Image 1 (tube, rainbow, N blue to C red):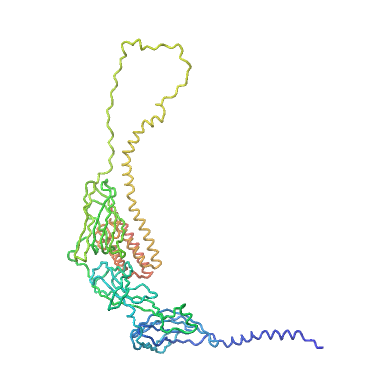
Image 2: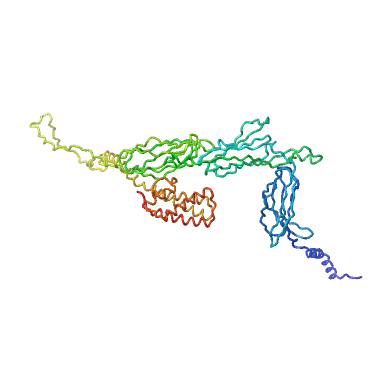
Length: 601
């Protein structure tokens, strides 16, 4: 009997179980890490209808991260970039990574769209794609679905005027989904926007449903400006005429069974003539307000002592550009000192074209007497009448006392000494009392009320109450005078917060926020230096009030440059972080120079 060799059997089994590993290793030796780098373009489909879209894919294989190339302009089509994707594939043990830039090619009219060969620099080499051709047929007639229309109240407006614009969508079929319409603007600022459904209208014997978007616009520059076009992107699902058969027909109710089309409706652009209010006849109080406004002014209290604050409330009602309304400075020699206040706006319509703007300010009389203050006077341009108008309420009549006076003490008559009383010559015997032989036991006598402290408190309480009632007004006036510097302290605290916000905005590159805080900080510091309402100062205040107060010519030029840069930022707020850092340093220097000016009492 032959005994098997156990060691030989074990070796044979181990070799048998290791052969899959050897096969994998052999295949790995034949695996190539990547294919040859390449670039090519694909267009699918290559035939569409007018108004339809095809997809252009630029495929970069094993060329790393390649930026999307700029495509040349083509005729009869518009090309829009859609995004980038990445694809990894393994074919015949060859691994490749493709970067795909995708574009939408939307055909316009029947004919051909020629996409030329594209040359791209990547990986130190030049790659060129083959030219492509897109055939465009009659396509889809979008006019049978609906159309978009842009409506304005008139084609001539004024700089600073706010007016409504309508975007109307007339449609016969309701879209499955839609995005809010967009409006191309040049020289206009967009405000509030509303949407509403209108009654159906019949146009060329066809019934259309109508939806309207109302938008508030404000003209900011003069010239013949283009408004629009407006665009409205929708998604429609059209049911197919031929239904599927067999099992596929069961799934059509679940997945729609229709054709999806993305339709973009576009209106015709409009040309508006924007003109400046004329310089002839312009009132000196005009600050750019355009519309129709009315003033209502109240003051409280109207009977004060010299140096006490008076709160003035100015309500401006009407219709127009309320953002252009500013509270003017006090006239010279008015006898009052003006401190910065607040303002608020309450709209009367959804677009904010009408409503009420309220200003609150504090004025302090400087001398006693009866003061009649005719302030403020609102000057504005009325676009309907094409004329300047001025509105002013009745003058404020404020009685100013010389100040707190001490109360006069009551005057009384001191009585003279009483005449001595003479005892009677005789005593009536009937009034004589009998003498008691025994006085009885001794008892402890209680102290007299006159010697008790509470007695004198009760006795003098009317005097204390009388003195407190007469001294309370004097103490209140003294307390109010001590609280008055808190108005300036509050302004200083706001300035500190604004400078801190400017620093944060400059460090993070938020240009629009930086310029907004810079404008508020300059307005607050100028108001503290020369008096007035923060937010109402223009570049004219530099020569009229700051330079006479001791502001140097060099600082005046630097401040004027900052104000000009703020005005430019209203239309182009984009700035680099380095530019914002430089402007921050310049602004802090100007704010310190303004702080060194002698403060107005």
